[in-house]
Length: 466
Image 1 (cartoon, rainbow, N blue to C red):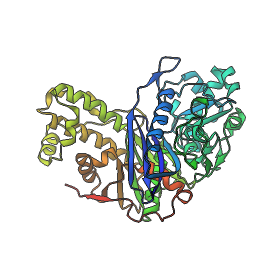
Image 2: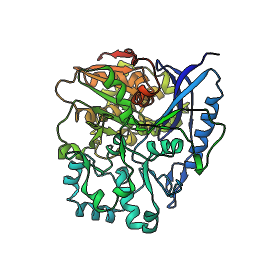
Image 3: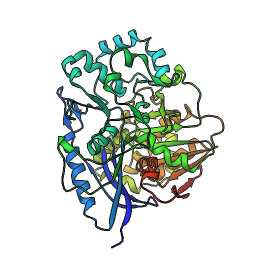
Image 4: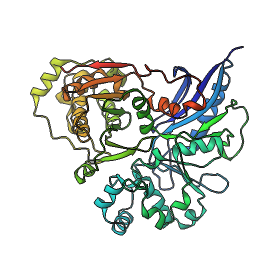
């Protein structure tokens, strides 16, 4: 019986865990997703349940392998950044997967920055705002000084995408998109690890840096043991940071300068055509640089807008006694926008200077709104004030378009408000909600796909101002 060649993509987000099968035209032929419960680390802080994640991966791959008409030629990984898994000589995880929002000790942070040139100088070299645990290198620094015995047992420290690859291959690798995402590890001006990584013995814990297109034979060892019942998969990639992976389809499809706003838990504005050095002002307002899969800096700015949206939506739904999913039916209402604008002077919104900064909506009284629809419009207007300020920070001459992918791309209210915020630019919703997964697949295209990358892989919907 003829079979269809596919690639499996494990796309592990902070909230949603997804497994996709793409055919050679990058159509989704099968998928499954779930939201997994968190657990707690030794300090009582919430963190990823690694056992639950591994069980979910195993069950998902087994289900995919039962589809007889599909030939899974490869597997690749896309996952959130700022998260290390530390393994010993036997490949066993030594610690929980610490949450990147876990509080960081102020004394230890001060000691670090005092020793290595101060916060501003260090941040400019590493293109990493001072973010505590969100600077994943700082997690290793903390283990070294607070848990010396544990530090000595670490064979490899693997960023989450590379750990997923490790589960499938038993091969340890470092990869540039994970290293280059606000980790405090990389000196962007020297294009190598910052000197502190060598001085502190951190480099000894990091596997060799390999090309984003690297593949290895699949030899799964989930939970430290070989597994039966999984589909026969030939090769596996080494994984990519999800935000950088999401950029790949756009870099492959468009040559004119653009900004991509990748929306999810974070809304990350990325400009791969802005190569100016980060300024102190930009750093103070949560700008940073990512690294493309080709090893080039990508200037970016971020707000925690997806998280803010979900939290405030819960509050709105509870107050108006509505199903929170009713927001999906809320369309852009220009008359309501005008009415809301006339009700008060737009408040000064928190600038995106903190990874957990909130919109002004959190301080609004819900009793001032007549309906769910009205309150939701105000929430999105407040979020868009933040989005506009954040995106403007990395806007550069020559940019003509903004593409939006992820959850907000299908939110017509968000898209109309964005078009109004940037009337001189062409604003497009990209019908590529699986951009990070598709990008990860494209990174190893030549190792599993016999066809060319489709020219129409991204379907765009234009939104005009007004």
